[in-house]
Length: 310
Image (cartoon, rainbow, N blue to C red):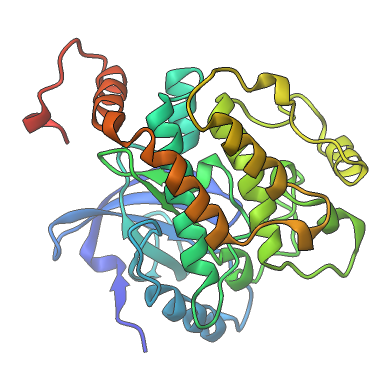
């Protein structure tokens, strides 16, 4: 089955984040000679076998735009008493799309917007096309991680299926395995609703809006109101989309099709991928300059030596 990453070969633990599925730490793997991210998973009694089976499936999912699972952590935290399971992954030093939006205080340069949208679509299409399709179920800027060149990789995919705590509520009252502002109307309309690929496509539509505007949807609305209004047809404000970039009208049109009220009318992930690829090609010539400018801003330097970039 699995080759476990034991706590004895990890050192210099540092908490770097948290999510609905547990805490995220950075630690030094002294056999591999690299820093790794450890995402601890919430689990109930007698669930280890099912968790490991699903993690094994996740490890077989390899795509440039999906975070790879390098191994399975099984051990104790430096301050912990009980044995825990976790995913071992690369550390993404550039953070997430959410942290990028916060740092830029708005929309990234248009070439990067179109590339991010295309790469997220590629990641979704890959997961949906696996022999045993994986639904992400929690697409949002926090789960789009960025590598050193600001390429997008999806994380937390499939965790809503493998976590045995999805019926619990997280600290902020949201259901685990989904973030209310990114969830489709059918998830609120039917108490016995079972997610389909169309769930992810709706979330992708909201994610496009967030990427294009640099904002979070319904940022000031209470979750209970969002759950009430989304089935009534409310969506993020189109007036917040500014600019006249080539392909923006077409991207906005695709976005609206993705968040259509009826799941069967939403496009498939492959259709999203091919449509956005055409739009990104209009900006491909300017992508290196856009990435350079953003990295320069993130590092707070007047000059960034390309040979010295992390």
